[in-house]
Image (tube, rainbow, N blue to C red):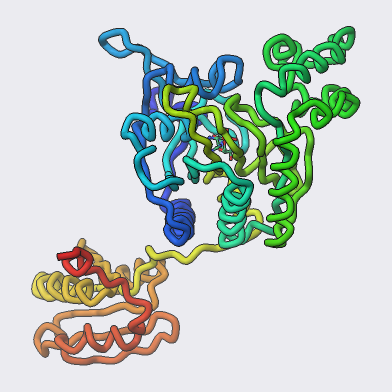
Length: 439
Ligand code: HAM
């Protein structure tokens, strides 16, 4: 490729029409499941004051310490492209006094997010996430509900069978202090076996050493003292209650005491959905409870729980499982014509067809009927309409069944109704914006 050809920046990509079919389908599933459960959609800005993320996700987290797209605006204010959704939602909850709404407040989002991650399979610098947040109440039944909802979405998308739910409790922050010291003591003298990242984390965020993916670090993590011997009894009881709800709903889980999560705001419940084959490297989603975050960001003491998943990773899994999504974009009809007069008839006919909900496209450029029919073949349409000189003169049109190769001639004004019958009412793409409005 020539040197001066433009390419997208490293780690970001176009969503081409084929992948949009997946995006559209996934968004539909999320909207449907969220609405069923009483969630309302929220969209927070693409960028926030940097403090919104620094103060919530944690200064020592990978996201804040090295993955944020931070820039100064013309007045020198530090702004950051959102690397995740929860912090912005919490900022918005506080700013708009949502604590005055009936609690809990159930919100969901489907948005692009940005992280200066090392680009590789399933890891991009702009990626789509959907997330659910339940803010305002603390009860293991709500954690169970978030998990159930995430699980349902996975089921709808056909990837539930290839995922495992990894579940843990990390207790209240106060109760973790002693354990962090215990961990530091445990790792003292073992520094040479640690990877560089863990070595850097040992001082400020030793918990993260437990979920490191490096083999040597994992061996050590297995030998580390058990966090559950140190965290508060209330969190342990809360966790037991959550497990009993999951059992009741027959949602399978794996208790994984090494799940810590990469964001600092979690309290008690944390969980991730892992790909059975590749494990934690490519968690498709994760979440947990964050009871302290709203107060920490200047709001009142308000408990919350949430989950978010990466849409690109879901699509990769769906493709691997050969799951196809219905393509709403497929055309029904291709209209071919010959001559200026035929073209006029075509323009009117195409409009009439579309009004009926028939997805129609015409080859309105030059080219013989044969060439146009070849195009129709390429678009994989079930039907073609042909209008040549004779048809214009006789006010007729030919409908051709592309698969059978059969055709019939009929008066042009009868074509829309005939095609509606052939395509089937249920397969039409009817659109009447007026009817969608409430009066
Ligand atoms: P997270 O685990 O950082 O959690 O991200 C959730 C999901 O976003 C990941 O499991 C992954 O599928 C996707 N993801 C993250 N980074 C990338 C990337 N660079 N490229 C592609 N996909 C990516 C959160 O963001 C929390 N806000 C979840 C949450 C909501 N907790 C409570 N409420």
